[in-house]
Length: 208
Image (cartoon, rainbow, N blue to C red; front, side, top):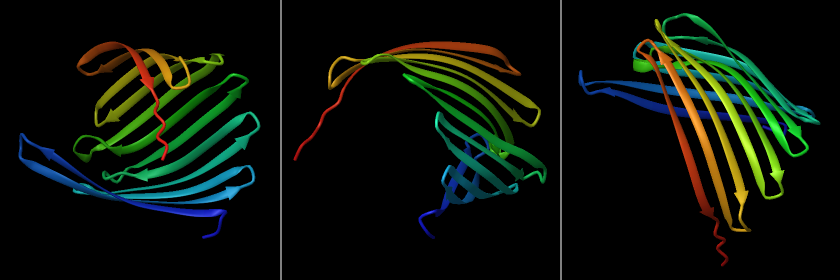
């Protein structure tokens, strides 16, 4: 194809093994997409097929990406025929807004894919993020996300929040601190966990 049109194709293989019943399930998949470059972004046409023991899962989608003076915007819409012969609507919306010293990001996504034992799982997610440089050598980032996974009659909700702070100690050394919180709600009840991290790192340059 030419410089303004690109094609991508891929194959994947997965194996599910269950020790309790000593059974295994194999899935073979194909993905393909064509990208059309435009002066203000690109168009994308995509196709995917998964061959599972329960049947074939087929997906098609159309996407559009815009390059804006203040950031970027991308959206896609698609349709998936599950192994249960049902049709599911899918879609994705992503936004990035550039600030003088950072950026704001947001994304909304709905996808359909294999859950446990290749059963259809609908995943809806929403995430918001902010990144800002406090000084020339330090910056802070905040992220909030919500994910809902629906499989058969079971629904699982996961809410997470995170804050990171990075500080450059010099040309080679950097310090990073972070805090994260996650809550999970499902049929079995609710559970939450929090974490604190502190990382000191150094980069090395190797010259011949």
